[in-house]
Length: 332
Image (tube, rainbow, N blue to C red; front, side, top):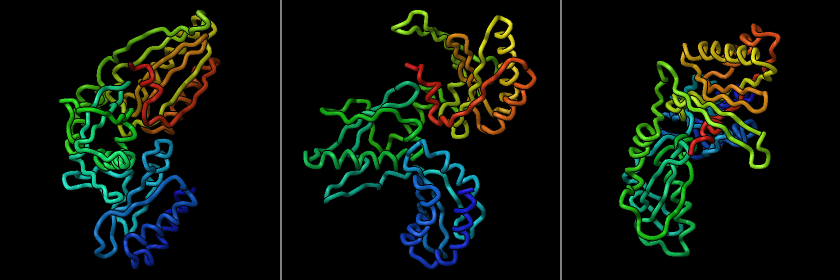
């Protein structure tokens, strides 16, 4: 495996790396990393005393590579040079943080943030709290994105934030400085969007609706959404979606599919390793979806259970979906 090869190479290189300055050591680590994970990067954090650092693995906010980051961190061995191996860049305390580019300075106090709900995520509107020269406007916007990433952390920026728009004119009254925004984001995510990260208990709350094609009135999609699953959106251990498709030829097949669904839900929910997110019916194909923490264990349970429901044929698949895009696509 690429993870094992990289970690072995890094372990072997430790004596030489510990003799280097931090910047040079980081470049050498990335040279080891790139052949196996070209879309990832390693960063060092900590003081130079004894050459001991925290090692941070980052995908630069690209969710399609988050799985590689997590696989690397989860497989990390104990290394004397790195006291901690951390997934994603964490939040930075922003009070005294700032950036300078081409003699232009921008601090968190210079960026005012407004927010709103956007399809289960958080949309942002940004104003500058000081005049920005026209020839520096693109620089200022680029710097703002970097400061945003530092303020709310790589994972939260990629998973929780939707559209980001730079606004003209006077800022709205409900804006806050970028330094104060992380606390506002956490509260809004938890209290307003109901993403509490707490596994729901009791009976699940469901909503249902029908979507009809604009070109074919007989082409209908029936959707049932588990509103109770909303609490788990964005939780860092619920990143996979398992989908089970089954063709229904008669009413008896529907009853069998529902029994399969109930039993798999019980198997996953009783250990809080998964929750039914939604069910759709398109034509005669019923698609049942779960968001799960351990995709391999969930798939194994689904396949084992499917064997007991023969001769009905279940098509079982999975997708890395850290943003819960399939679930949130129905949210207005």
